[in-house]
Image (tube, rainbow over all chains, first blue to last red; front, side):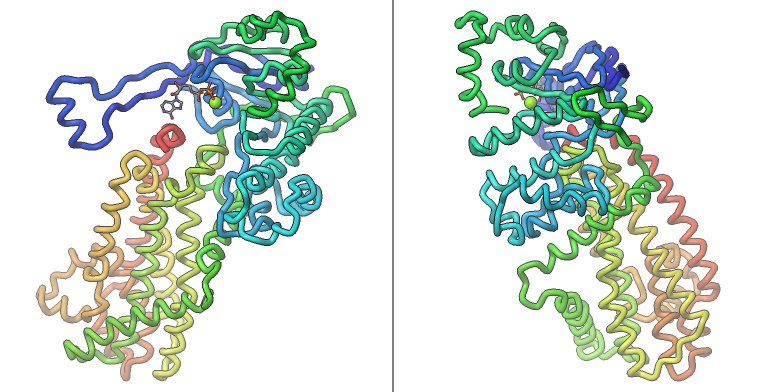
Length: 262
Length: 295
Ligand SMILES: Nc1ncnc2c1ncn2[C@@H]1O[C@H](COP(=O)(O)OP(=O)(O)OP(=O)(O)O)[C@@H](O)[C@H]1O
Ligand SMILES: [Mg+2]
């Protein structure tokens, strides 16, 4: 086994600015009000993930999940501590990055794939699979700006899922896909998991985390408060306190939960 | 890169490393496939859905030329030999510069969808803007060469060298300023307005609608300050390349209408632009860490 993601004592600081223009700022300064405030979106977070593990990252809104994903993806750098990863990263956080509304689906596939680090040859090799998975039919050669929002995200999703990566990050993004497509995506993510890639999955849906992950991390106000097996992790979040931990109800629930999230 | 046995652990033979993209201009050229696609995206998106398509890129410089020509040569009745070429050589360079600088400054904010989602070297965007502007120099050059040939142009090797030097100077200068201001523009969007205002001065600060000899007369030969403006040198170099060869007596034109030591000026300015590029890169890498969260 080898480590795939190492996060050590990571802290990420954000500044909240209360005023935007020079006029507002000078008024506030004259009144002796604060101009900005810093706070830690992540504080002293440490964990390590082995290659092939499937991690569910949970927590309330604003607890720092997306921020942590951005650090792992390398978009942001930690203010303290360090983040290390092994291999190529892709995932459902960069879906549709680089899409230009005036260009066709075909052109956008190449562009988005290049943004995700694919070469020309690699994209050509996978092009048919990508098109088939996205299933946008005869709209492939029309401008992406005229796609329905579901079609738009399917195209982005399809490219992201075909990147030959070692670490796959998924933040909740598929709110607009229809049910058959969501099911297809979840199947695909199971495949990714089975192929031995590290999966990092952010979700509020206990059901799908239970299906998909073998370890749960819980963030509370930027601190890591739980790191361990799935069942107790979900309990820690008190997501299913009303229904008890009967996995029966969870399984029944999961389909509906998939509706608001994957 | 990795083997993929079904159900087993995947073996990744890569080192454990920081995921943040290694940045810098060199990295941009290492990922030139992406750079090429970004440039192509800008170019084809600009003419997408337009009936005349790429024809516009000929129409625009031609109409700019016609407008200036009408005002300066017809209304103000300035008498410069082959004035249209004198003017157009300047217009092509000035437009290349203002486009690289202006579009480059806006480039990171405009591409925030990518910048916020993916770790790629962010210098990519100002560089792509410069290349898009460089691409749009081609139609201007085609028209310019056409006019020159029609006026009995005799190109000479030194002239072509001057043209190349002028072009490279503007490209480097435009990139340096675009890199610097694209990062600044993320923090205060005011910078794109500042740049717009600045670039308006370019037209008048270069010897294009007036001849260099007039500046020389007015300041009694003390033109050092005027020539410290890199754009003035770039325009003069371009005129050396195109306009000089169309005048009746090129030797005389060079000695009377161009500054002495034009090449020395050009090379000096190029060196200065390269230094500016290094500084821009340094400032950019200082600001860069905060870019994604401020977009
Ligand atoms: N660019 C930014 N500038 C300032 N504050 C930010 C920025 N990005 C995130 N934050 C703050 O950091 C905190 C964590 O945000 P984050 O997006 O990581 O939450 P999350 O756990 O993903 O929430 P959700 O479940 O709603 O997706 C929030 O309080 C948010 O306001
Ligand atoms: Mg989030």
